[in-house]
Image (cartoon, rainbow, N blue to C red):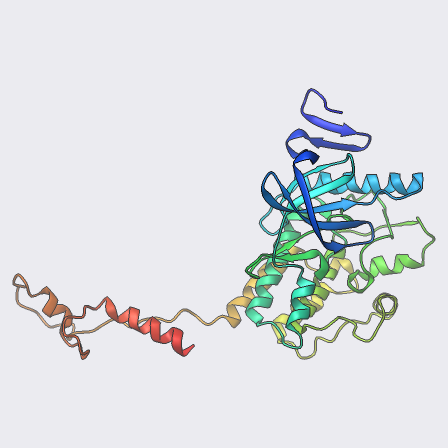
Length: 352
């Protein structure tokens, strides 16, 4: 039901009227993804191409209540944060079905992109660029007190040109509170932080303290995967990977990485969450590494036509073009000095 202040609410679900989707104007097309609790379709809303996430309500009253609460939480967070590296939220509705509408990213998931690249690895500049996109999205979430808890390649989307990564799926996101205890039911084991893995042994529904540093650990595993284009904890099942990371402090190998890159990865997956950097620090570390692997811009040497102490007579009208050509050895005698940098960069592009 609506209210006088423009807020639409039904039960736990409340949404500013500007984010309310009109189901009559929503067209749903082919399925493009599927999770445990939801399916994602390619669609159209008011002639705009969109992604339509349809959340399944469940069967038992307990299951229905749990999924509706999760849906309400995801919508609330999506409507609260906007960033160029977060999938853009367009709107949502609860009736006749629970639907979340976001921008449609035609580049697909990072998981699919990496699989299509194998066995080849990504160029290191692409790796760092993608990592910066992810880190900036996470920095934005954490600045709003939100923990994602499910950072993995399946939840990272690419733009059509495959140049930008955007974070999606806030289904497991939680608001961080120093007082609140959070449930153990989170994430995908292979990318989950050890402090979340270790809660698997707790009785169902038990709670445990953890904080936003769980996302830092997941980021390290994603970064390792970007670098190597291999599945982390290869040869292990999800549960085996969880057990090895949580109880034996096992991590993927960082032995063959350059020192600066190895430092980023290993500091992010440290066992002690408090020893892991935050995403503002991670961004600075990545930018420093990018400056190391990116060669400086080529410098075009200035043209020298005569010794510094040479005194030229007053210039007569019509001689400027001749003066510009003085000392040039190109075939075109009237070529001006402005032409030289252009031809140099053309050659530079061809050679490199």
